[in-house]
Amino acid sequence: MYKFFLYTILTILYLGLAKALSPSETGVQYLQNNKGFSKIVKGHQSTMILVDTHATGFLIKTYYQKYRLISGYDTVEEIIVRTSREFAKKNLKFIGLSIYRKSPEKEEFLPLPPGSLYVGNREYGEWRENKKGEIRWRFNKVFKNFPKYLGWGKFRPDEEFFQELRSRASLNEPFFGVQGEFGPQGKITQENFPHFFNEERMKKVDMKTLLIEYFKENF
Image (tube, rainbow, N blue to C red; front, side):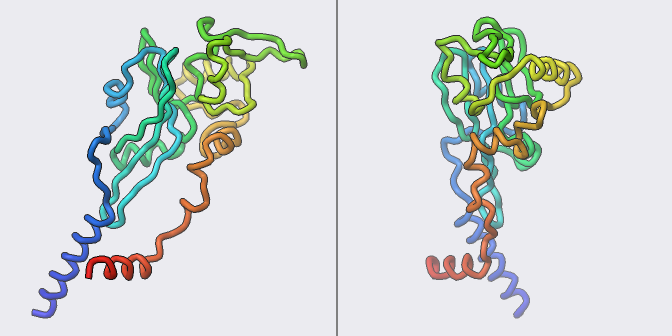
């Protein structure tokens, strides 16, 4: 009898904590895998950059990803989607990369540095020689804010970067930059998408404090 009573209490606590610590997903789109991007992205010449990912809930976790969507001449927007655990875990190593690109010709799902869709496209810019004699990609005036949107900081692609990008893409291999500048281990990503690397996010949950607060609020 005692074991049955204890089991019942634990079950109630489990369900109560799960409900209390797992948020509502009303109004948030669900992205189970790569195939769902086409339903979210309507415009052409669009790129989706994964800028953040996190899980909420204690016993029953809900996974979210935050993307920066850039669509050609359209305004830049940030989108939060709920996603499957598998998809969230898979893309943790691709923070700061473009993991979806859409052009009139095709859709691409290979993780590449942000801006890969536009570099080399004469509609968006051109290769120019700077004061140091280096050939770098420069966006046209109408797209002058793209480096900021893409999370480049002071980085500007050179021809070596572009050729390596094309080589990796042809082999269907993810590319993190010639010097590994992009991704969770990359300096450029860490500097320009700092929220994901905030130390506060890394702190472990204190179980004792969590339970005390729960009982205070509910009993």
